[in-house]
Length: 248
Image 1 (cartoon, rainbow, N blue to C red):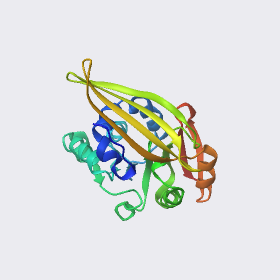
Image 2: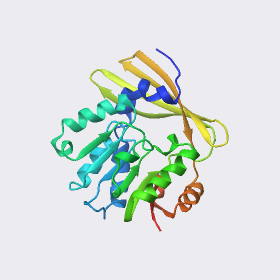
Image 3: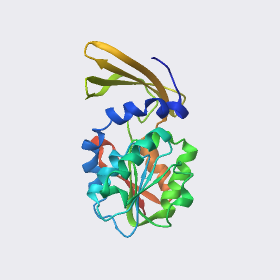
Image 4: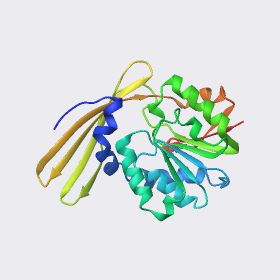
């Protein structure tokens, strides 16, 4: 099966591949994110925006066992996996609340004060106008001294990226692989094209091609946008493009 999709349908079509092939992302990303949040205040919840299937949520819960977590995931396919994961893990069930809306539609569901925000590999889903509202939300709800952690996944400018293998995983006798390529889409975005393949030994059992628009942002733009809302940015892990944002 081969088909192409756009943003609204992207995760509906690709959720099973995202869940399998991106499971190791937090192996590398987790230590940098949790270290940046090491002084988190357990009196207020931590908000995980774009929680996906819950790899990051689980890592955050393990690192901060006393902190309640609000996991925001608007996509029904990803959220189903997230809800199953949380409901079956006693370490998560009592502490993780799942909200099935976008971050900007979840404002009324968030407390007045939060101990931190995490936006891992999700910022590109926000347009410039939506980011303005996002920084506004973070500035209003972030506790004094607390941090929002964001990743700036490359590319940070609208540029061509050749098709590159992502990762692979084996489940039973099937092997799952994926590749990613990007091409400029206007002055502030790229279109990512993902190709997923399911292998059964030497036989290709299934294929899926899906595309999604990703809004790019340079570190300089991040700093400037945050500053408009009284927020300061700091690179906490340049190699992984992990940034901390706090109120000035």
